[in-house]
Image 1 (tube, rainbow, N blue to C red):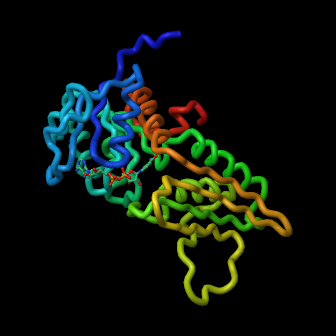
Image 2: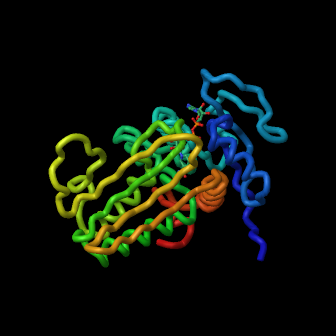
Length: 266
Ligand code: NAD
């Protein structure tokens, strides 16, 4: 069956970044999206460089947001906030994958979501979104008597820790336990931290080399242990998910959606 919808016109932020490049590559093979603009950081070089046929990298955010139906953001928290505030004036749809967002950035995103449809996800891969459902189910079935811990590994260039994906997994476990994550989280252990309290959810970050992203959720029981692991071996999976989200979100009512909505798994 062919989709009669016209291709979604996409503006990519940070075309020279790891994810920006991956999004541009992944878009080349698709008919549901068309890259129409690429906006790079004003202070960065490379403006005027051709990123794909007929599209030059530009520092002109205003022009980029004007010609697109939806923008894709894998940048930094500072940029995500500034662009969301700008996009709110255009009521522009968005796909936001930047992680490490604090309350101020989240508020800017929520404000945009009141005016336009947006998809926000710490991880755009199908596998990780299935993991979110699996760990919630495991936590519900096993209860806090099984100690839940998450270990995530990423390349040396990653700035935020723990990863947004690890936090999403931790929150899904807390939901399965029926508790507020912030009241049970443990992000670092150093020194005499005492015995592990029941119900604590620990998250540890490992950094090195060129690891694209690995997450393991451990459930430690008495004399048995369950491990749910996801390993990404290419950024193409995140890029494909973000492009699928971009095609999906155009024309939706204003609101904040996640990848489970896009995948029809909600
Ligand atoms: P990167 O540093 O390689 O790329 C970021 C790019 O954003 C750079 O090219 C930078 O110049 C550009 N940028 C910064 N400010 C900008 C602005 N104001 N306007 C336009 N461009 C701007 O980083 P990366 O590895 O591509 O990751 C970017 C973000 O995406 C990180 O937060 C990372 O954790 C996240 N990420 C999310 C997923 C996911 O599935 N949600 C997957 C991978 C990475």
